[in-house]
Image (cartoon, rainbow, N blue to C red; front, side, top):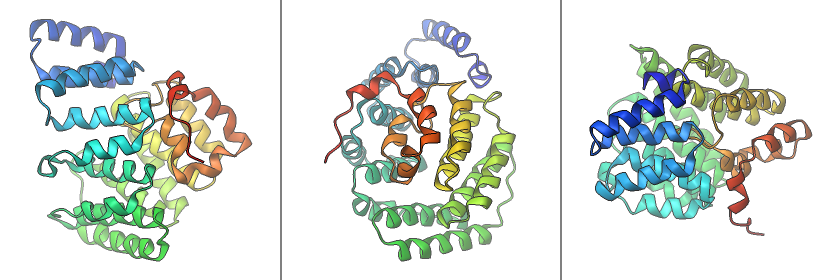
Amino acid sequence: MILRRQGELRLALEAEGRALELDPLNLGYRDEHALTLALAGELEAAREVLRAILERDPGRPRAQLHQWQLDLELDGRPAVVLESLLATDRRTWLEPHYTMLATAAILAGEADRALPLLDRPAPNPLAKARIAYQKAVLERQAGRRERGAELVDEARRELARSAAVPETPAERMELRQLEALIAAEGGHFAEAVALQSDNVTAFPVERDLVRGGPALWLLAEIQIRAGNFEGAARSLERLDARMSIGSVPFGGYFLLTHWPDFERARRDAGFAGAFARMRPAHADHWPAPES
């Protein structure tokens, strides 16, 4: 894990191979191996490892999540991912399951189907803020902007009420990311970019692939929503220099080509070059978009 976070992916794969030789039945090792393969751009190999894990432990949440992310990127069929997710036992869901639910539902054009499923126990204001934010995104994507704006306000109130004081750098990054997402959903893009830029500084992709990569990806997403396509292209090129677009655990090329909020960026001439350079070969096998 240390080697992977430092960007030494080949050395990490070799170390994981030795660990699996010593303990071939250890599913935890296989979880880590799949993640490293994906970060190295070996997406099909990672998916095969995850399939083998789920054959032995069908309800393993981490392996489920990573497989759905890879299925979405490699196959381009969000409706299939959504049905697979909904077929699992909700009692085993972790927070990332709800994020995947919202993502797959929006991409499949079924935001309304996901909305009632976002309700779950919220033990504190921070958890309530996260739920309100997720609902706000789905409401906006469903065309109900006023209701979405009300939920953004609710998310900001709960976030302020939480008075959360992170105890570790990872907790600080998670809190700052939620603040940035809520700010962006409320249309406060300068605030959102500043918050997420701080995360990129705290967890630069050059030092930490697992945390730095998602931080930089999210910065690019916020820059796209803010209309700063040139800045988003620079962020994604910086990311692409260190890991493959489409890797777990952040978004992928499929999201860039299909996420509704990125439509203007896809038509922008300044973004087109970076966008084209990122195109992976597996995108040629996605189903044709419906007319």
